[in-house]
Image 1 (cartoon, rainbow, N blue to C red):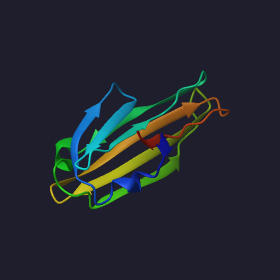
Image 2 (cartoon, rainbow, N blue to C red):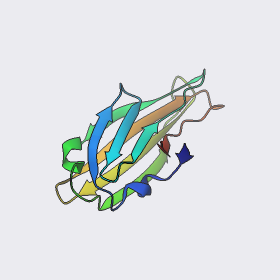
Image 3 (cartoon, rainbow, N blue to C red):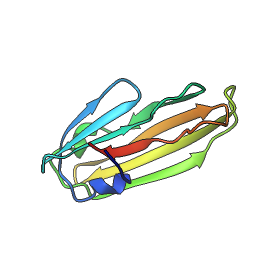
Image 4 (spheres, one colour):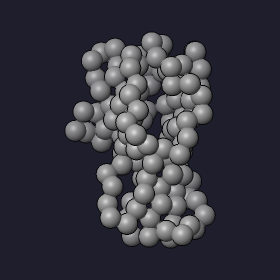
Length: 117
């Protein structure tokens, strides 16, 4: 399993997207590759998909023209700290933003992992 930037999806053709709960997305590509967006949870944190703006189906069967990650520190929460991570993906068919929210006591990672399986 190799850790990558979401930019690895650029120019790929996604043929399938599977959402697993609120903390994992799988992307299958035309060339037989599988990518996973997730977070390895520890004891004192919570990282999950807060919302998806747009239709995931718009990303299917068309080359990915844009694939980028934007991270922003959030307000302090009852947990301690928070981080918003936005994944922006687009094809000719549409644009999707996947919003992740990570909260922790400040000692654990709030980031999202993107790997090629």
